Image (tube, rainbow, N blue to C red; front, side, top):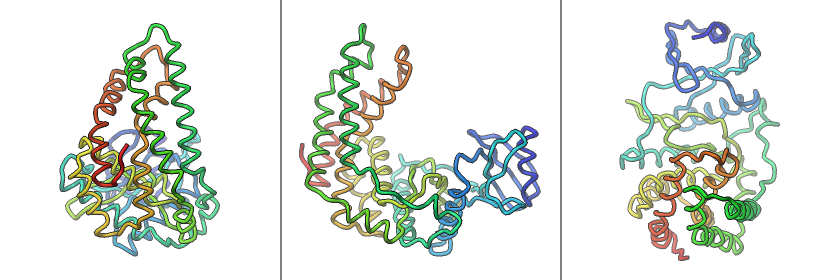
Length: 335
């Protein structure tokens, strides 16, 4: 560990026994257990919100999260002599959830349902009232309209490219079929009004994790812990379920049985309202992975496209029929 990182740890009322480096951070073994030190990446107000939500989850549901730790000055962020801002968080001895294992996938889904139960009606956090206050969301319609315009712009750009690489050729070959999914999602959205879900979320101060994936679910001897609440905020909780479900289905080839079990595991703990099911359906219809790969291409150095991105694009296209079957059987949607 560098001297400036040690100078950060000296600002906390702990005795450090040893440290070891991990991805962009340091594990710290101390007289008070295991901690993780990393550059903050969040504002002070948001750090207080993260701790506030974590303490609420522990008090109300005995749920374990990576609570930010206060330094000797009572601040949740500490500054190095070089001016970098760091955060120290309680951490866990365990491993990331393996969503390829059916049991852990379903337990990770149940963990999200428990989180959502206790993240309803979260008391206001005085230290974070400005940082945590929601504004009117852009709305799915505007978001999808913007994405659709971007997809068309990227197609025009690729058509003008000469010579074309493997990514461009594959994108242009599958564009019409994938864009049909984008229009399908927009069409479903036209006949639905999700304003009430949003208003209820704001009125009840309903929070979401904001980045719920297997990297942030820890399996331990005594159960599960949830980490990295950097994007927690007031929001529609189906955003978390959609994100976790989509990521899992991409790895499981949109397996209907697996997806059905995930929805059952969630709704057994936190029942889904009809409007929430419709919201989830619309989110799943949109070809978000296709758009993300196209956006990543357009914003990158196009002289060299990673082979992994070509593989991802081919996988998205190859899974289209499985996704079609998934949506038809679980959400009664046909394209």
